[in-house]
Length: 164
Ligand code: GDP
Ligand code: MG
Image 1 (cartoon, rainbow, N blue to C red):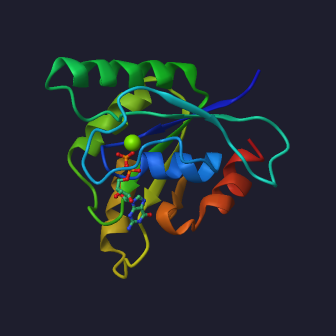
Image 2 (cartoon, rainbow, N blue to C red):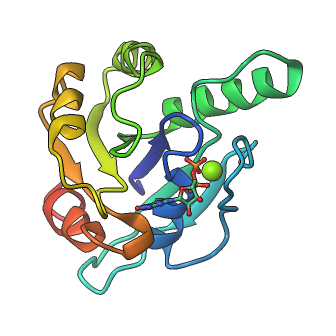
Image 3 (cartoon, rainbow, N blue to C red):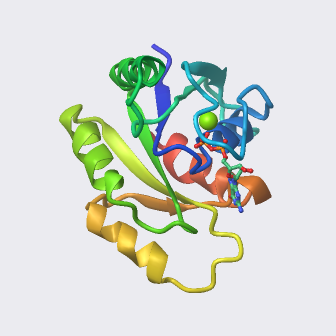
């Protein structure tokens, strides 16, 4: 069975950018304005260090469901979580901890899947205050990356995807 990893998090935290880094593709739409990824997007993780197949799923996130389209996107994300074996919960170091991230944490925990908290956008961040806030979400596996600078991506694969 091929392991499946799903990318979860608020809109605009960089899920699609991370997906593109891990799949070495540009398949996922990256945008400045929120809500570009509506459906689930699948790809294979590509790395010279990886000698087996891992499927990645990019999702719309778990924050928005004020209209029908957003509700559908939310449902698609829940399906993706069900399908997956490992969750990457992405947060944004620039924004710091946002209230809805407690809600997302709660939702994720219901599925009892192994979860890694990924703190993205650490480029240019020189105070650790924002980053330390994320520890209150209670995840013990935390990894920092800058997807747009391709930093921390390969160590993510080496540290978490290979031994797993
Ligand atoms: P998604 O909505 O979670 O899929 O987020 P996207 O991948 O579409 O990215 C949202 C915005 O954040 C885009 O403008 C990206 O270029 C930007 N972004 C993504 N990763 C990083 C990063 O590591 N550092 C910085 N500074 N910007 C990033
Ligand atoms: Mg996206």
